[in-house]
Image (cartoon, rainbow, N blue to C red):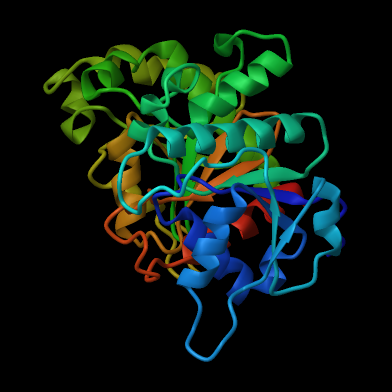
Length: 348
């Protein structure tokens, strides 16, 4: 594969496992990380390289870049870093730090803007800590996470309001894909977000994003909000009054949608098993945990988070900062490696 533009990997929270799984990916998967570089703090990444050093081996060498394009010429088993911001002092592992939150936000903003300008192919984001991001204060405390920050950057670049650039979260692995109607809001707010327009918009975004990826229109299974998808209105009216009309309109627009279906079985119906595909290519879930628990239960080592609707490619591992593991060198880089692979696939 010819790599024409570098792919940025943002460092994530310096107190979490992001830096060490990045270092592991560059050490152990050079064929995947070729043409990638890290947007982050050199001191933090050097600490990570030392942390994962195997007995009898030298630590993974770092190469400081002046500009992103230099990443294309970096040899394997070397960690290229573009330092946009720096930490005043190293942050301790496993603790919420406003300074780490600020740095993580700065790295994501730089990478998003570089991708929007066409200087890089896209970005893969290592996990940030939402409390640390909030503790960093303005402007970072306005964003619950990566998705909302990237949406705001892309909207500003295009001269749009955030509402004019709707995005959705998709979590995917080899067995299951799920897209969410609402993302990082309370459960009460998530239920209130199940509106005709939001459900229809999610279906349109899912269809538009997966059609080029699959080479055909995706088969979309839609989960109900209530137990048993409401049982015809016995357990709630949202399916009858909101979701079903939205599906009818989507079908009228040519989308291949099915439902609303019982949330406790639709994911099993969509799950691919080996060479046997599932009944659906993707499940649209009504809220965060309804959609993410089934995918994560199948294994976080292969799960990838993809933001749909952005004018850039963004993927990430499907786990968080894992403060309990940070600094031990035991964190698994598999999901990050899969996120890089997925980004390459989306860019192909």
